[in-house]
Image (tube, rainbow, N blue to C red; front, side, top):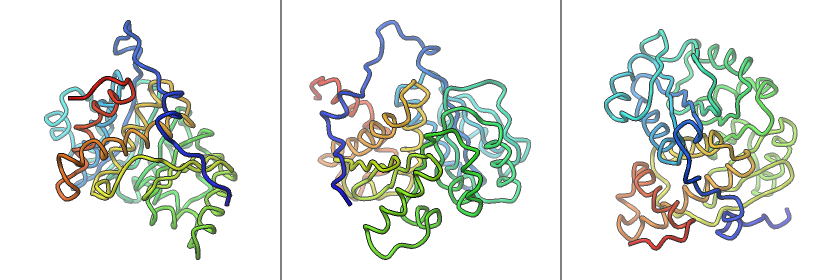
Length: 286
């Protein structure tokens, strides 16, 4: 495999668009997070909060009814739409057209949820991030990827990637299979790990931020929120994926001296997003 392109600060500053001084919530994009099931509403909270904290003007979260009070209390800035079912998603209905959608965190694999995902993919035309249980469902129904918009972003961790592309015997085989997968389905694969790589057809990019503190529950849910937010703000998927993984990793680099590895959590990523954005603007951090 040829050497990957490095995603470093120099590369990111070519991509990053500072917020327009005349912006308002209507110009900053409206994102939707579709996620959650009974016992896993926390994943929804993490993805929704990180989406909002990454510059999105409006965030609406679609959840089963059991998550309604949790969302309303934990993130008052996020709007909610609920499924007719109490414990898991069975039919995705959005009363408006957002700029981007992230789907999958904590969603589960109930049969009703699988059907709901298929029907959603069949009609959706918006820029899309597929994560977690959305990927696990799709790994058993790969033909569904032919329904997704071109350059949809997939964010598998190693086990989810294996379910999508099959087992590999070496690192080079893993990359070969992922490149072939990306080409076949015309999708961007964010290969989460240490380091994180982005596979966009035959182009391979290696992120240069992040550390072992990110190996914590909910870290991927936060990344889904960041990526969905950037898409909703108008970043093209190829740029949103790079900027998203860079910022996600940068929060861990900024936080580590204060938290250490052990006490860093997914919520810490969200807490440090502001400082990560300030780093891009070269604003001195105190």
